[in-house]
Length: 170
Length: 170
Image (cartoon, rainbow over the protein chains, first blue to last red):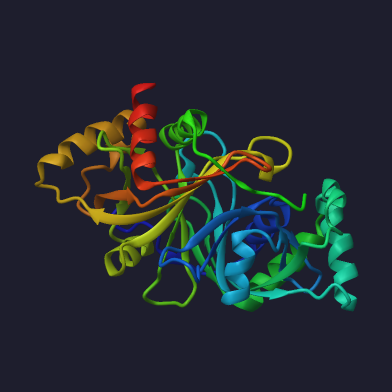
């Protein structure tokens, strides 16, 4: 236990695990800088992916996390749901991100909307409401923890590849 | 949906829900400021409570989150696990915190150790390892989301009371 969490070389298995965690996730925990508080803002958000290898979320402009991301796009997300037993034994991935609002009139909006609705069919109910909008969340790298003693650090490019591969396995 | 998330008055039901979420949690997602990055640091951590109404975690000094908390004690945690269906429909609570390392020789260490091991019996395996230490996480308030349209803001005192009541219901 004194050598817990050595960083392993990123191999195909790690890329596959990262892609699977991110592409199968139905939510993530977003941490953002809060212009109204010294404490990081943490919230649960919807999560889908784009064909360019980015993360995507749909949030209401009435929510406090939208205010945080508009004030400062530098944020992070934790993905991976613990199953039974020790929650720290289950894989999870932490991804530093840059958040970019997606204009409703942009060509990519329709693509992201269609892809997000395949992941969350029930979001059809509110996706077009005026206060809801998409953010692209561009990975800047990732820390993957595959369980005790299985830690990896992924580059930005490796995360993009993991997501694109994970999407094609859907 | 245009009036999503109005803040309701904190009542006994909200206090009970907050205490239940916090005291029954087997993990939380900690967001901390990272001295080595502009991105918030997010990680999954163990979580128990103290009889004084604080949160408690046990982490290794080898982990990157210990380095964050030692550099800056201002952090936050998200607690509450989604069940089936829409993850945003399940209750969760976000708690801004101040982290204080617990000295191994202090009188409170033995109390926190015993209480933490009641919550995580298997932590007995590593709780006394030299690199593991407890942190008390002092709530500075809380944002409780009981599901769509059920939002509450709790004061520091209300969170302490919620935890103390939640512990007595164990």
